Amino acid sequence: MSARAALAIRRWTPLSVAAVGTLAALAAALAFGPLFLDANALDRLTTLFIYVLLATMWNALAGYGGLVSVGQQAFFGIGAYAAIRLSSFGVGVYPALLLGGACAAALAYALSGFALRLRGGEFAIGMWVLAELLHLLVNLDRLIQGETGTSLIALNAFSPEHRRDYNYWLALASMGALVALVFALLRGRLGASVQAIRDNEEAAASLGVRVLATKRILFVVAGAGCGLAGTLYLATSISFQPATYFGVQWTAYMIFMALVGGLGTFEGPILGAIVFFLMESFFGATGIWYLVGLGATAVAFALYLPRGLWGTLEERFGLKLLPVGYRVAGAEGDGPARGRT
Amino acid sequence: MARASEQLPGDRSILAAEGVSKRFGALRVLEQVDFAVAAGEAVGIVGPNGAGKTTLLNVLAGAYAASAGTVRFRGANVTSSGAAERCRLGLARSHQVPRPFGGMTVFENTLVAASAGGGLRGATACERALDSLELCGMLRLANRRAESLGLLDRKRLELARALATGPTVLLLDEIGGGLTDAEADELVGAILGLRERGIALVWIEHLVHVLVRVVTRLVCMDAGRIIADGAPEAVMADAAVIDAYLGQGVA
Figure 1 (cartoon, rainbow over the protein chains, first blue to last red):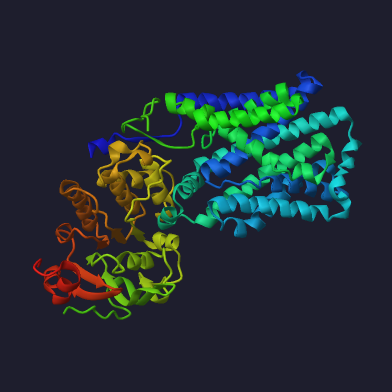
Figure 2 (figure 1 turned 135 degrees about the vertical axis):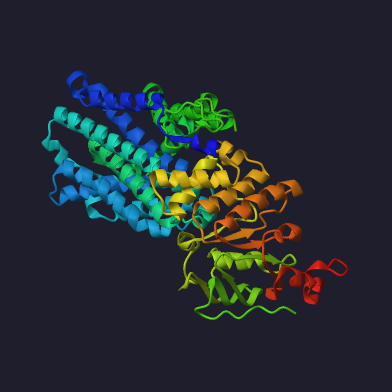
């Protein structure tokens, strides 16, 4: 009994408190970005925020929930399409962009009853099929003019300078809010339940986990995040071509960022998004060789660093900046250097 | 021959299968099985491979839907309820082949059970998880990733997880299988601890000498039916049981 009394549950460490504080301070400082950053830096950072948002969403689904989707471009595309449609109905352009994310969440909810009954590879491919189907349906809307596409012309009511600032703030706020929401959800009851489902769905059900309802929450949040990313991308590019927004390359990028950073770690995909962003910044103009380089990098990670950058650091040094799990202080292996598995 | 006892509504039984059948296509695995457990009772189930023991347990736990018949738990008809719902009502189970949540720590494994199955939150859920680990002798492994555990510890974790849901009835599926006698002894210690807490047990096991140290009633199944039900000594001496399961010259 004395052994039991000496134990305590520890979730935060001084390091992780410092990390969260630093990130919050960084986000607050970035909010003043338009005051001290040039136009190019603002545009690039807006893109980075979109990537972090996408990587975090895909990681939440696949890394924590075991829901490997190859069809997240469905929500990216629908978010952008919904914003255009709403704007055409007279909704203010920035509210329409935000509501686009909400429409993607609603779509995820509507699809969840069907999609989440699929398992493993069936789910992965089924999502891709759904994305293609939605792409074709959007093409039927005359407003979109098929693959020719259209533009969110209402954005022209704002000067390019103002638009750049608003897009930057919207992207920063969306990323901050969604990443914080996923972090809070994964630290809460939902986090342990989704990981249990990921590791063994039948066992999770036998222990009382509401499998479908639990997966649905994750799926809807990820749909909202990917939808918002789509509307943010629309806000920066203005033009909407269905083939671009519903392209599977968006999911390929998400997978790349999550795998390179470290699937199933909270920090990893954020790091992966930065790596992807840097590769794009330096090599994106090289066209086909850039894509070859992305593929080669992904293969190299899969072969030699399967846990990704952060996953490897975490394994070696027990490093956790944004912990979603639990440590039992007083039991063996509760120190920072956790036992190798 | 000992007969399956008739269960009437309103009797002492906390968990009951009434006329339960289970078919997989043309294969009839359970045929009109009547089986009941009283609160706090410990029942062992034995029988040859393919007798339908695990299928009965799966139908009781809600992992399989019954093809015919009724399952009652704590007075309610739970025939159409899923496994998760039955677990939240207090019906827990272990799996024949342990199914740990490999990517999570041992503690997190039991915490899921305490919060999802036990309906507990925050510090109370953590306390329940730690209590369960302690009872199963796993406290020192609390921070280990479950995928790194050996067989005995995986079996212990199955038990600890089921216990953390706060069950009134616990279904154990060959939790002693594959263990040495010394290891099985350790597990029996933990299981006797559950009995002291008033948890009713339904325990499928081939290690009969281990089983009879815990259970007060034994059921023998063969070919999807219950062929004997009663005191362990009486069932073991039953001619039909010797014929179907134990073999001549064993009893």
